[in-house]
Image 1 (spheres, rainbow, N blue to C red):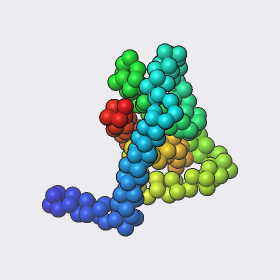
Image 2 (image 1 turned 30 degrees about the vertical axis):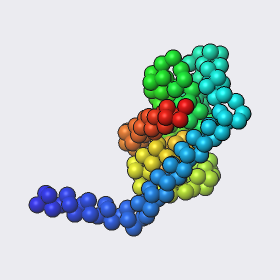
Image 3 (image 1 turned 90 degrees about the horizontal axis):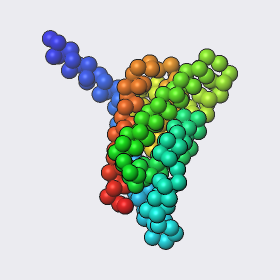
Length: 203
């Protein structure tokens, strides 16, 4: 009886995601992610071949700025600046540093913490009706998807080019449970690992 009940529940969930076109959205997001990785790789190769030696540039940054400054800058980008600076640039920096895996983990953690701070900002803004309504209009499509798909949309935001910080603010605005937000956002670490492995293959 329990097996049948569980199967029926899974069937209802599957039907819901199908009706709300989550699978189509996931397919498009996956294609977009591969496309963005390809664009990033081609851009890096183009700059490295025709403009400036990327390895030398990153080496200069490694020598000039201590890791704490770079990681704090990234934390600001992922929270205050809502992901203005692409994480890929910082991942590239970590790949050329003295302790690549350690700094990659530090960057992923900074992104995770930055997302949590963005969530808390969204949560506070949700208590100010006029401001929360204005922001909801500005990031309307993210809010709609969060209300439809909840945690799965947070996972997609953590893995794909969808701005993780904006998804985090939206999660706070709709007062999505913080403990579940933190759980789903752990997929952010996987994104950093994937991009790191791609960068290692290219440079």
